[in-house]
Image 1 (cartoon, rainbow, N blue to C red):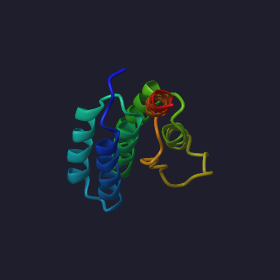
Image 2: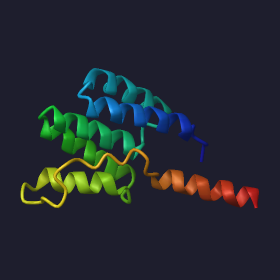
Image 3: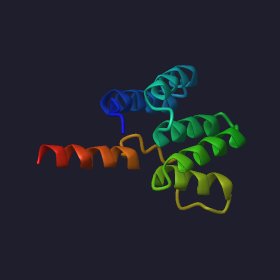
Image 4: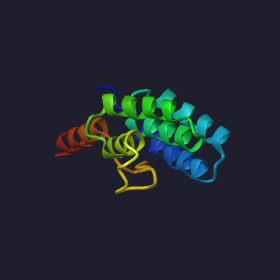
Length: 120
């Protein structure tokens, strides 16, 4: 497995999350595209794209990105919860999107585990 630059990825993710919360979608999209260059299979990136589209009222595109995040990492809870909330109007345990930018993907957890084994 090729080692990704997760620090840079997460810096961009946090910045994109802030832009989405500020409703600065063009800037958020530019950051998310930079994230895709680093890792196009990142569930965090697709989850944030989903949130951005949901905020813009495009539920269909939001669901596509939530599903993509789930395909790339079936353990990534933010995308799972956003998918459930967005697909079922009666699911009101969480009224707001789950950003989850700081949460590690399965791939990242694997890399950390490998790094720890290599150090020890």
